[in-house]
Image 1: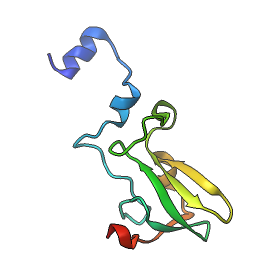
Image 2 (image 1 turned 60 degrees about the vertical axis):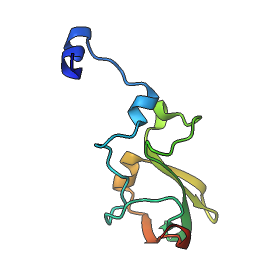
Image 3 (image 1 turned 90 degrees about the vertical axis):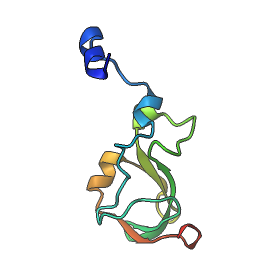
Image 4 (image 1 turned 60 degrees about the horizontal axis):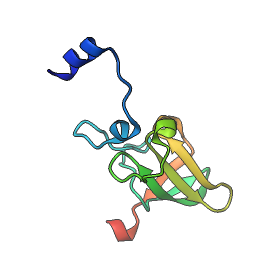
Length: 109
């Protein structure tokens, strides 16, 4: 029985948080507005102040305690001057003009 048959036979089923964030061949990487893939330790500007991508929650490297059912995929940006830490959801990233990619961390080139 395929997924479509299962859906119609049993009605809609909500995905568990792990299933929602599970890696798959269809999962797209999180991207900056300029099209570069967002990676841990990237150097960025957040509202013009220097920062760094501290965490990328994309379904492949997630924390066990992450409340995925509430927040889903996203990034945690460390910017000590103003924000400290700022979490942006996948939907936020697509509209967030004040997050600018600067460079890759030399440790991750």
